Image (tube, rainbow, N blue to C red; front, side, top):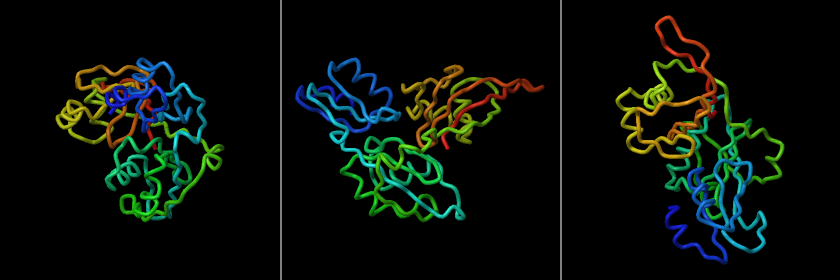
Length: 230
């Protein structure tokens, strides 16, 4: 996607879909005039232009998802999987905010389709309606919760295996097949040694940040503190 964006950029006006951290870095390296939005989000749209830009030019809408919590809790990966299951590409979806309700940034041209077609997330019935930036301005958009993980090493495939409950061999293949990013960059090396403060994004399983090492067990396992997406 990003290669085509760079090749077809107009000096007058180019609006991208939602960009990953890696793609944002490429825009910063290749383009002289650009603006990202929303500023507080991880995934942002970019406008490449020398002209004056307003927030409305980014064509972003926010959808609010509500549901009855007695039927279960919905996580970040559940929402993402349900929207992708409608046939929508990942680049059309921005950040997903999990709070008392759920808020999803989407490109404007897909909002009506999602409102009319997203009926369930997992096995839970949901209601989807159009929201606004004003409605979410006072919401804590920190999508991370603190957790602990027990690992045998800091290898990337070990971390992925623990987070996803995949076997070590399946986790290794998951990494090799370009499903994992470290600090915004695809990493296909299962042997990569994860470091403190690394941000690991696992396709369909959310993100974790390695926060600190707590201690080692008598069997030489490592207990680490992580922040994971809700």
